[in-house]
Amino acid sequence: MLINMDRFQRLILTTIGAVVLTVCFSTSFVNAQNFEKKVISSPDAPEAIGPYSQAIQVGKTVYLSGQGPIDPKTQQIAPDASIEDQTRRVLDNLKAVLVAAGLTMDHIVATTVYLKDVGEFAKMNMVYATYFKSAPPARATVEVARLPREAKIAISAIAVAP
Image (tube, rainbow, N blue to C red):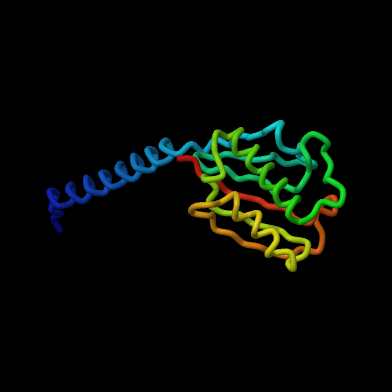
């Protein structure tokens, strides 16, 4: 049986071409994305109280660890602070970490709010809304049994750089 070499050669060349294009595309995509993990830290936010970072940046995405209502100067929660006061402190802490990454609250695309008492949702939400005036981020809110240091609220976030 004779093999049509012309057709066979075209098939081989086409296959090799497809493999080369796939490798080139994959390499360009990986090179276009910066997958290096960078630690973001701010002295204007509370120090991490465990083995974690205030935030991690991978490419254009910044993953902000959950912030509690801890005053970065005293490393304490203000005694008898209301849910409104604690919400402001948490959002100011997130803002400080974003500033260290060269970003603003407008760069946040998603948050997760952890409330000790979901009955305080409306009060929290009134303060929260003042930090996200236009195009607020996607959000999930959950009630939890306890938070570190008996906080009433914690918020984690994801931001994307332009």
